[in-house]
Length: 391
Picture: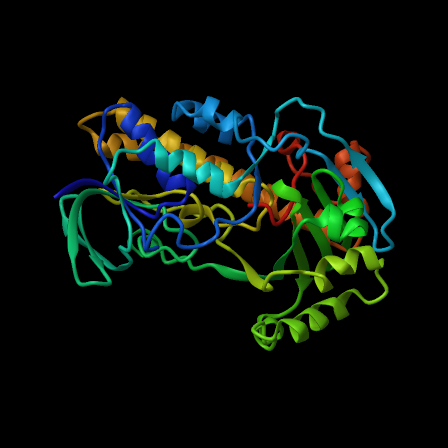
């Protein structure tokens, strides 16, 4: 029997495994992907000093984290559809929310774990309770494991969540479409200039063109459109030329250096329909199982998702270490705190999206940044500079 089984080798699950290891507690992570390099691991993440950085300190990996920081990446600017810069904040070097690449951060976590701690190619197809807090996990190849503690760190469409909750993610009516411009300073200088050194948000009611400057001169674009799921499903993204034209048409009349972030994209367009769990999602204590990250509290991206997942993992690991021999006491302590912080963050996430894509966009977001009178309920001050799309 596996003592602790963590489903999902994302940042949250790996942080939990690492913090447990720091405290001398073994765990096994089961991941559906075939290997660590099976797919690209997303773009830039801003890691916050009040949650994500604390998790990395608990994992003993803060120095490694500092070595992969993208210097200058904390810069943020907000534009209107004409490309006019309405708000521009440089990176002050304070380190409150430094930018790192998700793939590099995941590599640090993976490298910190002993060989065999992560089992690849283990796609979960079913889980069932066996009584006494034990659970059986079945994988796609027909193999099974029995575990004394099952942790669902398996994201929005968690296979573990139904053991605890009937809640299912719901589409919020907003989708992001991602693409990249490569070697942008040399090959796409106008777009590179408008993006600047960090994050750029060009916003209007119901839509936006957002971009992050990544390492090696790449610009990672997140195009936001408020459209029903049928509209997204009706686009043939395998026909890149036609898909680009369809998306760009939503931004007719916008500055060409902004729309070029779509039309000049050099990679496939990747649609991401944004889903959420109910604000305040929680469950009654069920012996031997819990959730972390998006599996527990999926919300629209606001720059908090990865941070929350890592913080969940660290807090759960610390609780298990503090309550050795009493798993239920550890889970109860962890969940009560997690429910409270995730409910607050879910409210803030919804408010951030109203500021970015509501009727007064982009002015509501600028009012939040500058401390002017907000036009919607503002997020809490600790959020710093939210960047939807960067989770």
